[in-house]
Amino acid sequence: MKTTSRRGILLAAGWVVIFFLLAPSLIVFPISLTDTSYLGLPEHGLSLQHWHTVVTNRVWRGGFMQSLVIALSASAVATAAGTLCAIGCWRLSSRFGEFVRVLMLAPLIVPQIVYALGLYRFYASLHLLDTYAGVIAAHAAIGLPFVVLTVSAALVNFDVRLERAARNLGATPMQSLRRVLIPNIKAGIISGAVFAFIASWDELIIVLFIASRKIRTLPRAIWSGVNESLDPAIAAVAVILIIVTVLVLSISLLSGRRQTARNPN
Image (cartoon, rainbow, N blue to C red; front, side):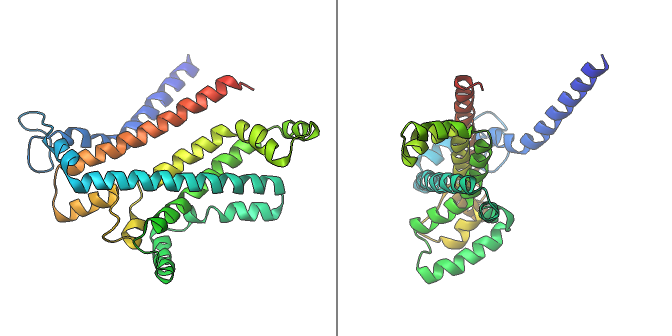
């Protein structure tokens, strides 16, 4: 009985913490349906007028498409580079490999505003300011640590004997990588790609430093809207950001469960 009561208390405490963390984000849902012309809860009823503004406004639509393209491109680059880096460090199994793995975590360790300031000075000399290539590369760099971490964790549980067996049966290093190693660590690769996508999708500070007029991602459009006017359409855009993030995480979770069901061991 004591064990059951303790579990109940811990479960209730966990739900309280979750609600405390999510409540500030959930409040934007009713605000996005307000019938007023300012940020606030609905007074006389629910209205979709601000959602209509988001759909029809060229700035919001352009920001959504730019954020989507940049996030997809950056997550693809980060996933490819991070997976190869993690596999390389895993194969080395030396102090140098550990050093490289720690070095890849620098974008998470260094304060983002410091990283953005250094990136601005570096991009200025390369003429990459306010370019898609520059923003994608910067976003890929901040997504890279997530891929390295998740793939490295997946490699810990990988049975090396599978790869050795493939090599003994005549598989080339590339064939064993493509047909044996990568399929067995697919869950870690997908999780890293999802986190890299979310990191790029929600990123603001770096875009403020290295982009100006040409590139206006959705978070930057929200930032500009807050500075210029407190339009309730901002709440609708925030809801879109939350929904896309939740959908991407849900897809990652479902794919991980499917792979676990196929490979229970």
